[in-house]
Length: 179
Image 1 (cartoon, one colour):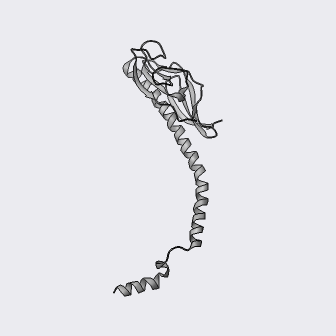
Image 2 (cartoon, helix red, strand yellow; image 1 turned 180 degrees about the vertical axis):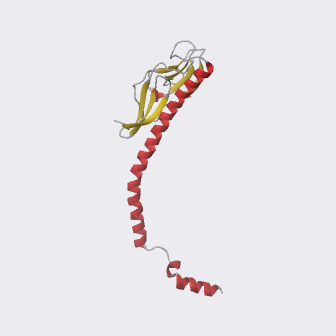
Image 3 (cartoon, helix red, strand yellow; image 1 turned 30 degrees about the vertical axis):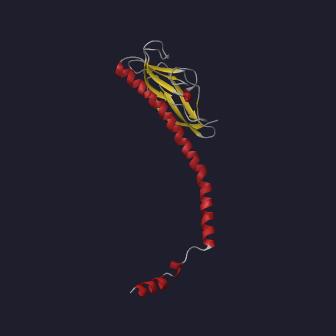
């Protein structure tokens, strides 16, 4: 019975017992190389686009947290730029942020203030434009002290924008190609 099965496999599938030829292997590798060289740049651009969008979403979540806490607590809550995660500074939004209950000096983390979140800096090479104040404060009804647009960018790639409206509403959208 075993001989019959082997004979049938050999007769029906003569290539069953041998592997790839060198020519078949080289053609397959060449096609794989061409497809890879076409796909990698597109994949890189896609990954950068999603990373910039993610960094913009992280900033938006800081603003959403501040607004929600201001309304829930019935007090002022601020988000400020911070390079060290302890004090507010004009380091830029990409350097990191602090979300805190702002009880005394506006835009300054005072000893009695409650820190709600400390956000890390963005990835090296990514920027957030300086077209925004050093801090954003929400009052007890959720209105911000300023309205502005922040664009998260990496050179030669499509950026991501965050718009803070006077009503306190926040909108994320795609920006143009970054310089």
